[in-house]
Amino acid sequence: MTESRSDRMARVDQAGEYGATRIYAGQLAVMGNRAAHSGEVAAMAAQEQDHRARFDALMARRGVRPTALQPLWSVAGYALGAATALIGPEAAMACTAAIETEIDRHYTQQLVELGDDDAELSAMIAEFRDDEREHRDAALAAGAERAPGYPLLFGAIRLGCRLAIRLSERI
Image 1 (cartoon, helix red, strand yellow):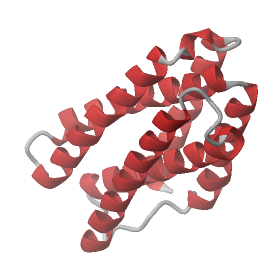
Image 2 (tube, rainbow, N blue to C red):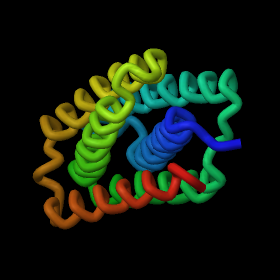
Image 3 (cartoon, helix red, strand yellow):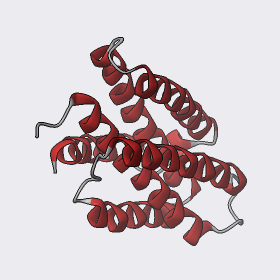
């Protein structure tokens, strides 16, 4: 049976939200509630958990399988979160800014591609894109651009995010 475009979108988006929960888990494990913006990080983490739960439910209703790469994203996400938090709070925020910049681009492309074909998925993507934009803006306001090596860190994380998206769409 051929998989629909909406099924692939749901899978990759659920994988991304899962990865985000793991990144925040890694950051919070290192920073705890000691960092200046840890409350904001915890709130963003909770929002990502909600996004993931809603994609999980959508996929279960539609019979869409998750990506086979989920164990890799679990480890990679946690490691990225912990590593950026170890560098410092600004690096953790740079991670968020980079990922959310890429996810904004990704969700916007999906909305254009979907058009009017899947109103339920489109509504979720549009809502979550707005949340991700708020996360990006909060990260920038919290000093993301002051992170050591910000341009390199930002670019490398965005590249990794694009690669994870491409892999999760089909695998």
